[in-house]
Length: 81
Image 1 (cartoon, rainbow, N blue to C red):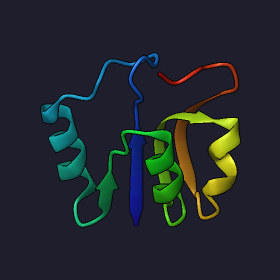
Image 2 (cartoon, one colour):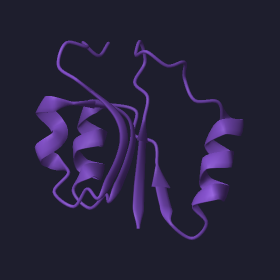
Image 3 (tube, rainbow, N blue to C red):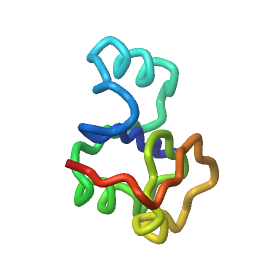
């Protein structure tokens, strides 16, 4: 299973620390975890992702065709920096 965690700069959450990234990866076990740092990376990684956590804009939602679970804030007005 592939897990995408996305917290863009300037978003409602602080940047993810290395400690927090490590905790997420350990909790995910053998599953793949990616932390895209841009919208382009997010779109690319979404193609085969099954789990998403973070900030998901409406316009990129179609790029997640295999999404089974989301712990996301889905917003339309947030502008990434």
